[in-house]
Image (cartoon, rainbow, N blue to C red; front, side, top):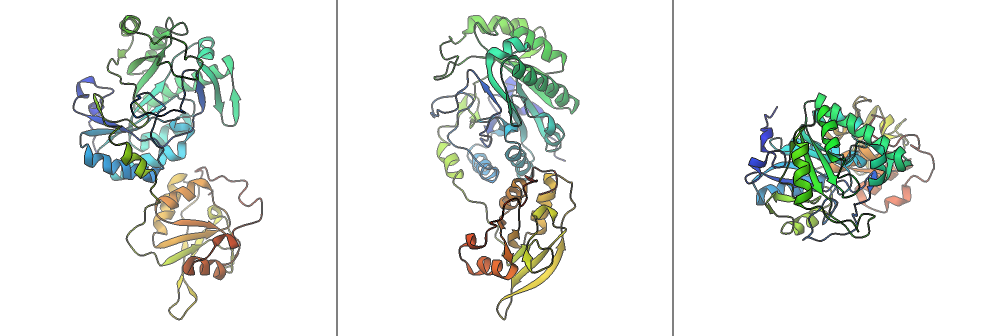
Length: 423
C-alpha cells in the first residue's frame, strides 16, 4: 500500500499552497440539493466559483485528462471531485473515477467535496479507495436557517422543501462528519457566509462540527450570482469574515486562503491553470472508450441453453466465448464461469478482466454499472434478442445491431445494476 504524505494538500495546509497543486475532475454533473446562491448554467474561463466547469468528463476521460495534466503540471499532489454537481448525486461516476486514479496514480492524494446528502452509503468504499480528505459544505446547523438557504433537497426520488428538507440534509451532514472521522479521514467543513441569513449563526456551525471531530472550517463569503434568489445580497468583505473566523477559531482551525475553486480547477491555488488547460479538458471530454492494444478476437455470450442470447448479464453464472472459425462461421472456444454475485461494483471489474480478450458481450439485459465497467475496459455490451449465430454475424461482419436489439419490455426491469452484484 502506498504511503501518502497527507500534509501535501494545499487546501488543508496553507504552507503547501505554493508548492503543491490540485486538480478537480468534473465527473459529477447532477446535484441532489438546490442552494439559493448556486447557478451552474454559466461558464466563463475567467470566473472562479464552485459549480463552473468548461466540460464534463466520464471516468475514463478523467483518467486520461489526469495523465495529461500531470505531464504539464508535475506539482499536482491532489486529485479531487467537487462537481459541478455533487459527487454522491453521481456515485457511479465518482467511485469509478477514484478507482481508476487509485490504479494509475496511487501516489496522489484523493479528496471529495460534497454537500453530504448522499455520501453515507459510500463511506466504507471511499475509505477503501484511498480517499484521504473530504469536505462537507454545512452553512447552518439549525433547520430554520437552513430552510432559507436551500430551495429543496432530494432523497432518492422524493423532493423535500422548507425546514423538513433542511432537517434531513443536516442529519446526513452531521452523520457524515462522524462517519468520516471514524474511518480516519481528514474532514473540512465549508460554510458559506450569507449576510442577513446565517452570518450570526456561522460560529455555531463551527462549534457543532468541531464537537463531531471536523478538522478545519473554511468560511467562504457569498459570491452573488445572477438568476439566484441571493443575487441581490452583498458579498461579505473582510470586515465581516475576519472577526467571524477569529471567533470560530476558538473551536476549530480556520482556512484563510480559499480561492473559491471551480469544478475544473487545476494547478496551484495561486497559479490556476483552468484557462490554459481548458482545451485539454474539452478534448478529453470528446474521447471515446479507450481501446487496448492487444487483439480481441472473441465475443462473450450470456445464454441459458447455448442457442439464444436470452440471459441477463447479472444472472449469468457463466459465459460462452465465441470466435471466428478458420473454415467460416463461428466456433465455441470455451465456457467461462462468471465472478461471484454480491460483490458490488468489484464484480464487474473482475468480469471485465475475465473477458479481456473479448471485444463485446451479448446479453438480454444489462445494468448501468456493469455496462460502464465493461465500456471503461474497451468491451462493448449489446442487448439483443435472438439466435447467437445471428448476433455474432453482426459483431464480426458488421451491420446494424438495431436489427436484433431487444424489443420486449420488462427485461431487467427489476434491476438497475446499481452495484449490488445483480447486474
